[in-house]
Amino acid sequence: MTAVLTPTVLLAPVTVTPTKPLGPSHLKGLLWTDVMFRATRVRTGAAYRYSPTTYHTCEQTSGFWEYLDRTVGDTDYSGCSEEEIGELYVAYRAEARRAPFAACLPYVEAVERHGWVHPASARVLELWAGHYRALGMHDPGLTADQPPGLDLDAAVDRLSAVDMCLDLREHGGPVYLDATRYGLALRRIVAEDGRPNYLACALRELVALAGEHDEVVLLYDAGLEADYLLLHRVLDRLGTTVRRVALGRVPIDGRITSARHGDWRGHTVGAILATLGQDHDQAALRLGLRLYFIAVLGQGAGDEFRWDVLRRSVRRAERLLAHGTEPGAEPDPTPLAEVLDRHRGDHGYVDPYRLAAGLLVRHGPGPSPELLAEVFT
Amino acid sequence: MTLTQEVLRHQVADRIRAARPDLGGGEISLPGMRAEVAAPTESGTAVVCVLRRLDLPTFIAGTCAFAAALPAERVADWRRAFTRTIFLAGNPGNLRDRFSFHHADPGGTIAWTAPATLREHAPLRRLLRLFDGGGALPPAVAVRVPGPDVRPSAHPAGHDLYLASTGVTVGESLVHLGHLLAEAVFDGLIAGGDRLAVWPVPCLVGLTGPYEALRVGADPHDPDRLRAYAALVRSGS
Image (cartoon, rainbow over all chains, first blue to last red; front, side, top):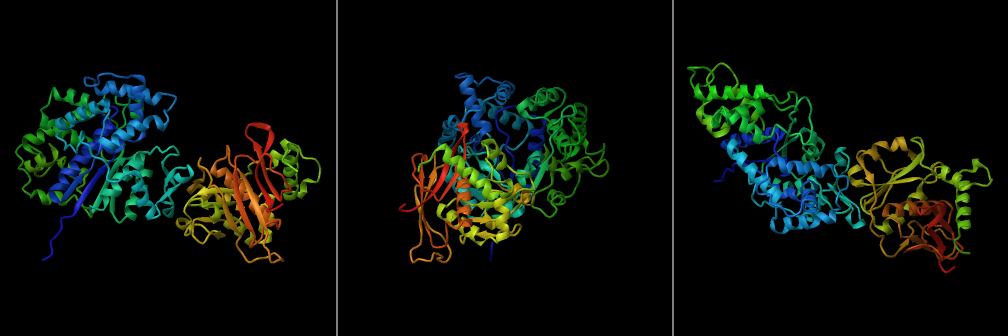
């Protein structure tokens, strides 16, 4: 008798670099991924890859560390807030000169050799792990050493073997990702000085992992669409089934800005938790935030962040937790597996939007306590 | 004969007159020279050479074979544009379904388009990036020019090709080599069966002639000076 293998789904969201506070756009991506992961793993084998280690070597992080040690020097980061470290990050991004890659190399090598993490980022990750616990989110290993499966040369070799890479390093040139056969322009992933960008980091991780899973789901900021289309083509060429889920950022005061300009100010995850935590219990907060960032805001970037709508979602969550959709309504008797399968479509993962939006339907049975416990709180 | 600013100026003026006889045979000033060979408009003619990597013997043999196989009317058009060539990093194998190439090396690492306007090359240029790098060229190579022996004697001609290496990127070396080789083929200086020995040297200063061909460009250290970047010399001369 042949064993039936459980299909496995790998969720690979874009990884936030631990250099600043988590803001609403980050939180949206994290909650989408968390609900997708927790719902999908009920139905099939699911893995959630989120490795800060993989991205420590890219310029955003290792360059920040070099900046800190050059400008701040020996200091105690263990008592710093995310905001304080984030302000240093804004200053780093505003610096006119950019340190040469050679200055960042000791940091890159320490990460590669023994999983070293600069104390400023270690502090940020520690604070994030606390937010994850408060939010009831699965911690995919924020503070663990999770090196990518391939070193840079091995990744480039694997890609070159399938004609997806153009390696000009022997001529003192860069390395390009080559999807020109699909009509996509060459994309530099390693600079002339040897500095890898975040795509090179992602490839070291995903090329190694992709073959172990039946389906890879890439979740990312919609602004990175072009790069993720490239990743899709690469993984597809390596024989992997890829699904892309692009998430729009959350505009604040009508604008989509960037962490490098300090867009989190006044809207950090820590601030959201502290503000709402005064009036609501933990379960309502967890469910309410998921309702707001998944079902209310949706996949796009159409609606800006609004405290009043967020509070309304948390109050809605309180009612759902207390007595389903309406006072006196019975919980949905449908088995959890069946409920989740309605939202899988032709793919392996469960669609978080459809699942969360289903909770907002005003009539009919309320969500089962099992669904709320397994996926939403 | 040795390289002097005067020799270099004469060479540049000769090249302009050969490519553009319509300009007349008068004196051409240095600024005039620069203006003539300046970057053309989108209607200007150019060849695009796509390289997956640079293997110098393959590039030299391929450039000679490409030039030798170009039809006469295309040669005239390209020469009028000073054999302008854009060297782009790309894998010819990934591009064959979307673009047509006039010539490719048998190993598939380098391919050349036919001469066409920059506008016509725009889709290919959008997809690729300039081929360049700060690395050094290989130390020295010897190449047999492809094609049947065309020299009347039983002894194929031998040439030494000197290439300046200081302050020159790999991409710039390709530009200099490409111009010199293509034009030498068109002028009948290099033909099938000839042997070429390539010698990267820091500078061509002190190199004695007679020169079969010279590649001359602006000296980046001084706008009023020219610099020799490549020279073709008959072996044993």
